[in-house]
Image (cartoon, rainbow, N blue to C red; front, side, top):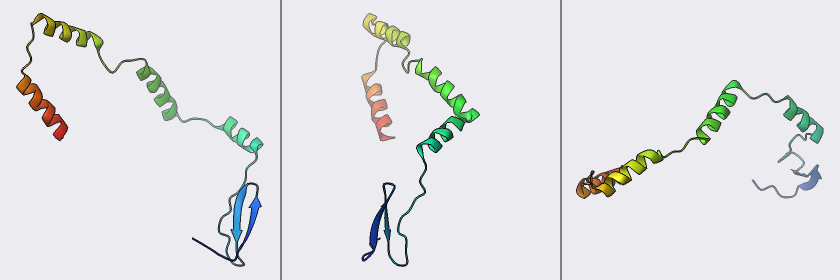
Length: 98
């Protein structure tokens, strides 16, 4: 919204643009002391604490089971497992089609 003919004033780092009738923008200010007090009084919810614990536990695990990867790799090298490339390629195509 553009308002012309108004006065511009700086109020604690905020731009306040006014006309005779309308205040375009204004926001309450808080002091650093008030912000620090609010932060000290903040109590996370039980859900938030539970999610933090779950995130920490998950960060210690791997997305890939390397023992399975190694056993499949060894089976392919030994020739004890065969891969049907036609079936594999079809599965890849279907996966990317959604």
